[in-house]
Image 1 (cartoon, rainbow, N blue to C red):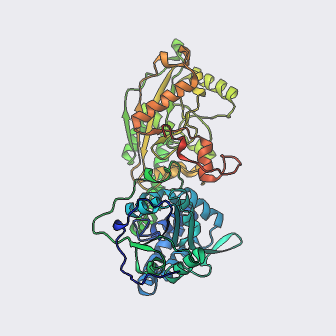
Image 2 (image 1 turned 90 degrees about the vertical axis):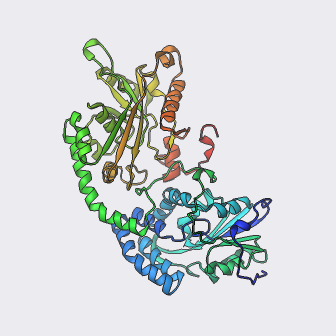
Length: 507
């Protein structure tokens, strides 16, 4: 391959991106496609997901050594320490799950606008990165459209990562150039993009090369909805991308947060519901109530209960609905861990996923009083509502939509891959978790099935009403879609098909 000897490459902003459909681009990842130059936050996310707070502690303790080796010896030496601390002993299949279900959320919020402008304009896209390929490939291919990802290969034994790397070692410097020559042979890529001296070797092998230089002004990342597809589903416990300081705070807060979570759960489970709101407030849990809830059904007057139709953010939605009303509201659930059932302060009834049996059960419960249901069937963390199951609309015309929203600053209170019994603990481990419960007006009779509307029309109307209240977007995604994206199955057993954005209504 021909070489370009001038190491003074022009800035990426000088690269024309028009008419590049037939061109090949080769780009580095950290500091180039991503704004952040450090890969520590992503190793920290992987460490916490693979080994919990103890592995995160190990990574935090190892990070000063990694930094020392990085600046005093070589970039390669520092990255080797991070790989060992984060991945050693972990199942490779678990690393792949984290790469598919957890890391894309964090990567997608850090894409460099100028690098993405050029990278997305080219017809063939290749990424050379020092990061373990197994960690970054799902994001780069599914969200940035990379055709080829060449990264550091980790060693495995018996299905577990050893923490060591395969030959030729960490993909930096000359190793990147050799990897590029091996793949492209005599063909010369049109564009090379890098951000540091160790990228110059492969950049010299491209017809045009551009540098993503450091900026004194903060660079605003590309909006995630501008990528190939939005991140609708994601898993993992951490809310924020952990810098070294944030990772240390998580480690220090974890035991304190767990004790606080036990106290908050005990208050919600043992105290009378009318005082739970004040107990939560005293323990740092904020509950905001908007709208006017309907009066309690009077069974003595022959009134049947109201069915509260809630958006689904965590399994605690019915509990915070009860907190807002000051009285326990039974809830029907699609799946709930045994531990969550034991500590729940309200009655929970499992659905059988059999329409006839479930309909009969819900009708009987409504005859006894008010009832809550989350027709999405599973939780969604982002500003989207999943498709509403229409069964509820066939059972009663007394429907009250409830828009549920929450705020978590450190830990997510949901999981698709982990132990669901820990969900309430992780939610209450946040320093100051919050819920906002908004009661919408009771559905007018002329919009119900009793007035001749189809159950699907009713369900879609309520979905749109809640979405408008929360400024969320309606989708037709279902529980199966979520589990296919995050766990590689449909919630039971099955293969993982690729999910595409076409299920976003209006797209």
